[in-house]
Length: 482
Image (cartoon, rainbow, N blue to C red; front, side, top):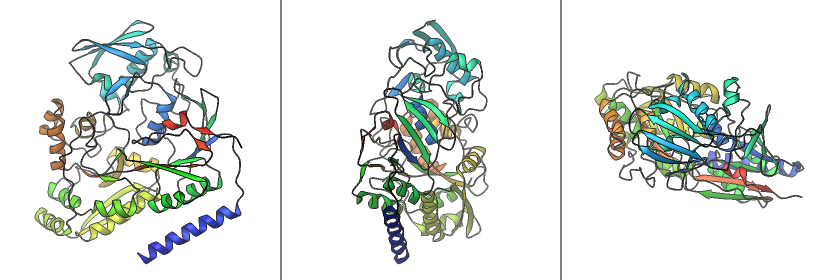
């Protein structure tokens, strides 16, 4: 504890000293500092959090969600014609692509038909039940399904692309064209957008080191930062006279993932031992920001499909050792945990490493750059990993993440969990029974819903913080003239 306090004092003293030495630069654009830049701006491929958050601003989709995660109209309203027939009617708003062309029903059809034809997108499997898409006129199109799906409208959240650019093979991943509130400008050393309402430039600055990110905010080299800071730096920012910090409960779900093809981890007693070897409450209190809470499943209890009856696995290293002995593993059990190089993620891994040691688990940490780490996770090259599900609104995430047929690249079953009983529950959409069973079988260890916060300079107004950590506030944020 003494070392921790000394280190914190040194960090904060260094920040203050640097702040005094540097003049505050002035920028006309709004600079948003992030820990991780997007990987892919093509909405048919984007699965990492940063890409998904940016794509919400670059593109419009047919459907969005209300505060209770129920689907509502975005670009289109819909009507159920028959159990396998949905009709979507485009409204007036959001129908101008950034290249000046008009968004119509043919663009919607082209977007979804192209997605369904992709072999390397984990999102394409979502629409395997679509039998046919038929355009009736510029404003109307029909989706015909192979079988009834009451939740189908909630799946139509893919950003709409211009059909003419799809046919020409445009690289949307780095040169996107959408119809959202932000227009893509350039992606070189930084990622820059122009806001459609007022032409304001918005720049995303990737600053991996949290201390440097805080320093840039204090010195005026950044205007806003959100998330991905240890709690002591958040507390420090709250004390700065020219910085405002807003906080809220979060819904983004952090978890520890298992590779179920690993010999040791295929044993449920080993997975139970790992679950009992983590002291979540201690981590939440000592290493995470305010309003973080323990989690039992991907969707929080307040979600319409949430399960508030799930009890977190208690920290019990004695029981963990007993379970490992019953599993017949050689002690200590050696496991490799992969994470990104983000300082906070490494810190959390280090805390878990110390906690697991008391339970007879020797945890080796491998921190990799984000691209390499995420690719290893998708390819199944891991024993354990830590990630966070961001912006999840629909319970079919459980089928995507744990359905036997949904291993990457088809879906998000990165641990290769396979269970026919769970598959049957998912088909019936019995979410309570499904989440109970997932909690028992432990294809992952639920950790927490991390609290949300945003810090900004005093001249910034109009930025709204959301519980899922999205960046939608960039569409409304205002920087006062100086």
